[in-house]
Length: 560
Image (cartoon, rainbow, N blue to C red):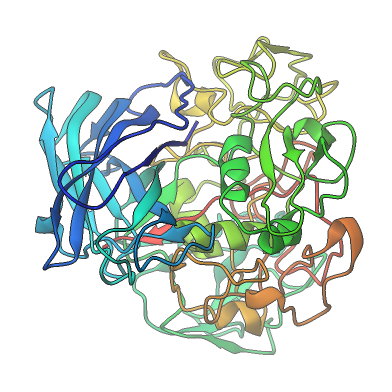
């Protein structure tokens, strides 16, 4: 699982605080090699309030297993993206709305601190826009992290809070992987992949060497072209027609962080749990209690998120996981760590905005898959063209935090797709193929240790082949979504529920229109094709009016 939180209520904002634990949870994931897992946050308190300065500290312990940092090979590290939400409960001069809001965290690194319990020196990199911080190892090493008294400075005065407000706070931590800056290749030089990127008129990989503007299409050497004419949805550039990819479009040369895993069922449920009624209904048209996110009575394709209390009037609903459909939520095998699908572009963009993250671009997708290595023809995310093609038949510990495939390959690339998914019918637990002894290939891991970039859930990067995609400038979410439940970041494809092709329809698919400028990469659990890193068959998508059982989410953030 990639996200954990602890809620508490403070009696006031002064030196003595009453703490009440509302919820904690963590699920153990298996790991391999240098790849981290099992992040959790606990014992959160408010401390060190400075009334004249209008700030206090959110203090908590943070732990995760199998952390790493290396200066060789991929030259990267794992990290936690940490952000805080608060809700005003009472207090003199305090407006109680019941809404969860993002806490403004200081953007000065030195305002935050970490006390180590196991000798691992920490580094904290604060976001310039005050939405959160990255915490990671300061130097090379591997092993478990146990950081006591992580203190994040919350500038509550900037949020308009009076010093006597009583608040409830939730601390969220998401597992991330650092993708270092530098040159890399897009396209793999093969002649069989639909729409793949290439160097001008040649069937060779194109090297990204900076973040400057790029000419798309045409037959000039050095232009970023495509294979022309073989896509289900074609680019608006080709051998004859050229376009310009602006310098502001993130190209993957600059360093960024990626979520290690796709969004899990638990992550998405906890996102829904801090929305208003109107926002919840935009993301799930709940009409009957104990209905799943598609408003059905059974889990759609192993998607366990379900509404236990309806959002009605001014009272938000409550969501949890119930894979076995017994109306008892968040049991051990209720699918909390399964990668969630049955989402739309509007759903995942709203999640990204709320978490202070952003969509990846399709160039970043190729960078995070193959790294700075030369392209391999027809390669998958683990760097080879070998793919296991035998059904796993069933899952051991189905729905649990230690869910495993039966008899995965020990030498070929493992992925969840139609030939291995026979009889299972949906996405798997995130990180499912990684064990203590598995190789990068057998684990299905990218060069940088990012999981399930091939198969499981369709990734939805921002694409090059539509003007709505090229207008993307890489702005991050600010922690707030619109009052109507949509991402509202400038130049995000489909921001505010808009689409260049169509508008949202009513009923169970409300808010589910895909955004022009977004595309599909990496394949999914239900397909035998489109799995390879450089496949671009769907370079854009003209207004699918339904949530899609293949679509999941994975956010990124430009490195501070």
